[in-house]
Amino acid sequence: MRGLFAGAMIAVAAIVAAPAAAFAHGGVALEQDECVLRIGPNVMHFIGYQRVGEDLEFCEDIANTGPTVIALTAVSPKLRDMAIGIRVVKDVGEEKEKANLDAITVAYIEPKVYRNGTMTFEHDFKDSGHYVGIVTARDSLGNEWVSRFPFSVGIYTFHGLIEYILYAVGFVSLVGLLWWALRASAKKKPATGDAIA
Image 1: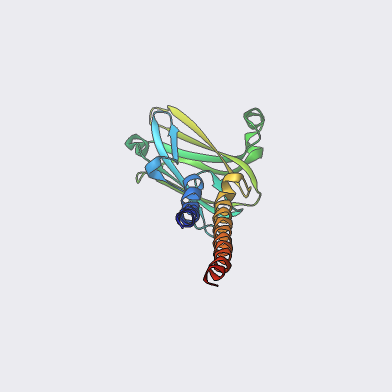
Image 2: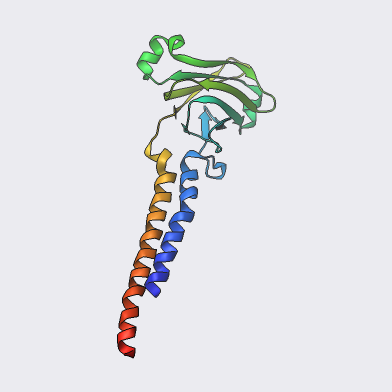
């Protein structure tokens, strides 16, 4: 009976842990600083979400193509006085990127000062693939800092599928445990009947 109880607890734990484990990678967990973007000596948080098809915010992997809202929020107060801009490009490698930046640019927001500390924009990603966000921050003296963050759109990776994998493992464990319990119970009944006879 103890083995049955332990097995049930393991199966329940696997099912309960599945969403939490999936959230830890692709979702936003600001308390763990998963979405921190360093730009020179300053820090920003990066989050995004999709209007259709994905209900979680993300940091690295966008589940599907389509309209996507991206927000950059200044953590360092100095960034509120700087002009912030972003360019989203297809990830073709830095060498090819330098050769013809305009040809691989899919979105560009010119640098400007955001006094509320948050820059938000929407882009409709038509193609799945790997992208790079290039964020620039420029102060009033003309000093400029650049930060790059890679992300993917519409690409199914192990991390993107981990939630479904964990649910499947939990479900299979639970079904196996129930099958084992029913079989053990069925074996005990004939033995008890023989003992009474």
